[in-house]
Image: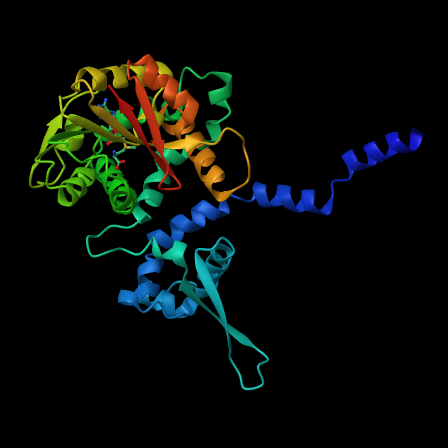
Length: 368
Ligand SMILES: C[S@@+](CC[C@H](N)C(=O)[O-])C[C@H]1O[C@@H](n2cnc3c(N)ncnc32)[C@H](O)[C@@H]1O
């Protein structure tokens, strides 16, 4: 018995090697997103990609592309690239620098994850999403995460900046613009993936996208399904004012908490997780009113697994959940399938069907 007690005491006082390493990894984790932000700001992915070559380049070669007028510190860039290599953003190539193989030069190419940061022919990538998340006004909210526990009636973002995030963005055209580019960069690849595997837009003539931002989702749906004759891109007035002209799509400004334009079906991507249960119920009730009997609300949302685990999917969904809590709504959240089903029922929808195609967003059909 004595031995047992002393064993427990020793374990508590002396963490294992794994525990010592694990906690130090977590304590230094801020280096990961901030370094990602740095390589996006420096345009490193485009410099390596070079129109598709993706040939391994040394840090000094990358530097000469991103700072063509010279200067910069190649060693510090290499430190950032090595760290992000350990997170799968870059691939490292050790090239022998002398004949006897004694010294090596490090070169870096883009992995599949790294390629998501390359600007495509439409000017899109996941880069603006990373920049959007790490703007000073959002960063200022992060030291206040614990406040969401102490007082959930006010968001850390509001505590620091004095007003809710969307109101704040609305007054700053450059923040609104970055938000739209961020959403487009994330939504276009997702839409390409689901439009290949999901047939729920068949037979819909007039489709409303609630919180549709720049209208990319509607543009892609209309291109894939010519039977959708009319798209209504519904978002805040200051957001639709900046949306580009899209054939077949009308941009309508308004407030989804007040009313939503009517349609044969409603599409709504990445909106519900931003809001509290009662706010979601109100949005969904307004969707219900805007639909004919049998009409569908097609929502795309992160859906949490019931049990927590350390898989990349669960981590990405739970990390995004804390982002929502900190920036948008202290009681807005990513929800489980069952919580979403219950929300739909509470708003009047009689049928619910989740469709898992993309790892991050699940397609959720709520039928009237
Ligand atoms: C996370 S973004 C998603 C954008 C787009 N659906 C996508 O996934 O690319 C949420 C959207 O909801 C819009 N939004 C916020 N409050 C709104 C309101 N009260 N009425 C209508 N749209 C709103 C925002 O302007 C933003 O475009």
